[in-house]
Amino acid sequence: MSEEDFANQFGESNAIHNLSVDCNDEYLATYQLSMSKNDGDEYKPVTLRSIVRSIERKL
Image (cartoon, rainbow, N blue to C red):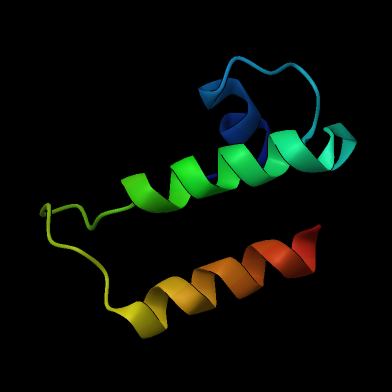
């Protein structure tokens, strides 16, 4: 998912690095809770941590 797709998912026109810390925190938490594999299974915790670290590097 691109940065633009992520922002559009929450109705934001700004890039995620231009949002307030509180908005980013809320959006990222919501996004993380909604993540699942294409087959509907949940990701393993180690995979979720990798995804979070990848997002943190981007920010």
